[in-house]
Image 1: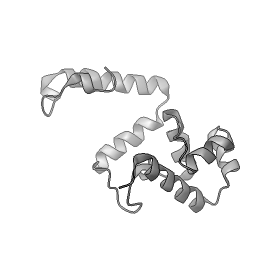
Image 2: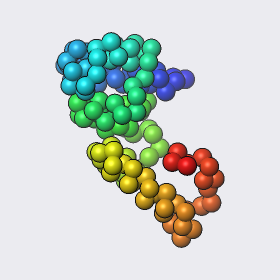
Image 3: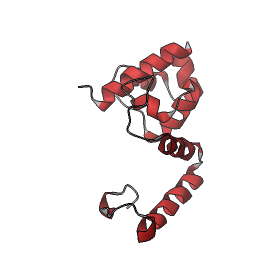
Image 4: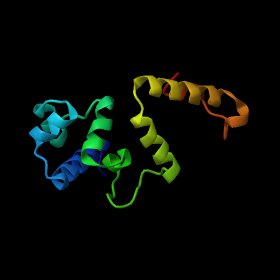
Length: 126
């Protein structure tokens, strides 16, 4: 079974090849250095979280496509609405992202908006 790093590595290679861009050109477009892109493609490193948005925009893909085991069909377990929400989140600037997470946190605190009882300590913004 492939690790998340291997899946990311393979998908990044695939979409970079499909785009026709060389690693140097891609690095310039996403505001990074070619050595980092090469390390991602070789599976030696993974991109920092803030790099996923420019990576996806430059490659013309959605975030789920970087982590999907099947490039044609989403296999991430997310619904179309959940993928849309995640994609929308990555279009926000840092202030917008902070506000969105704050809003979600506020909603999660209110029982009438929760689907089931969750352990709030596991939420990434706590």
